[in-house]
Length: 527
Image (cartoon, rainbow, N blue to C red; front, side, top):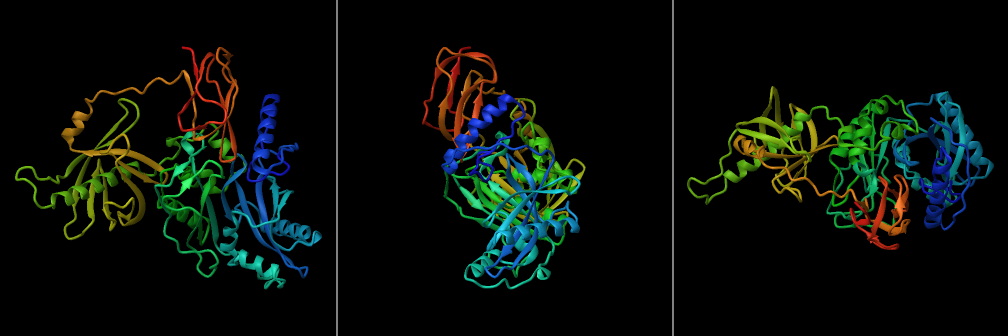
């Protein structure tokens, strides 16, 4: 663990000698690059802990209070992913005991300003001091939501020499708040950093704002990026914080899922699908988790099928609805040649595309317009009926409306780089690529030959944009499976590439210090 570390940088867990050697080297390099200090220390790793922290606030007059706790146990690579307040785990007695210990610590060092005392909490609610962060933390908005306090304002007032305007008895705990860290990383490629230009960045509608603690029980977005901005490889991957405040935990989870549905990010990949999967996981919903939750349930990586949708046919119906409305508009254009005008039709086939031959799904769909209602239709998929109504425009990426009188928010993208006819539908973390065509066109589509992708097994490819800091092999060298081949650095994290199989190096195609793009060949092996 890096002595100057923070934010998950310069930290590794080792279970054997090999992992200790690799981890020690990576920790030193990350610490040197991130903090200018490569000193590392070791400590015992406590298994199955909860990470719970207490927010404290002290002034220059000796007054210190605690503002309840934050649950920060949902972590990946020691970096927090979801934070909430209060914790679904600890009791009122434990909360009081932890708060009093945190206040005692702050008073002992005559602490002034806002700070956080972090604890490791065992399954029996026994807790141990971890460290104190003498600053405002990323997850401070969830505390502001449940207490109704502006922590930044209070920090400024304390720094100006004012007394705290409240006592411990005045601290409130109203509702439930959750924060999701929105990171520029690809969860389907082992969370590798995703850099590039933000072609589209449209957060969900806000009803809460910084420095305004009067409007609560809504949605808040803290960010510093915008459309057209560049996400470089030199900084941390977090590009926004999404915060919701609900009347209870179930309400907060529901609000967060809907807010994630309306968060549009294009140009770089984001962890929004992964956040949606976490929020829907039964163990998270029940509050039964610890810091090993992600490693336990997603230890083999994150896949599209890890985001089960409550009703996959709804996505099919939504694709058909959007395509039908597009056809209606096209049919209404003037100047069409007689006999060649656009026909709207009622029967369609929605082809859910898959990367493998024969894996496409063909769904017969019937669409009926609703007389007298603009933007409304009844879509039938098999024996399921979806009455959809939406005031959104055809060119909107984010579509809101109702389905069978229940509100929804989804994202529709028209055309992809490989298929301009595609409609990409995204909802509750599930993303499908579809084509909505006539039944006859679907029959012809089934006859189309499948073009297999090129065999790239003899290459070691860069899985992300980054800086090549080391090439560990030479031409003619015999390499065994699992042996280090190269090291790439991006967003302050080192990523080691290993050989997938035994082989002999034929060519080294990239050199140390080179900036790489995604899927750029680094090493070629003999066949």
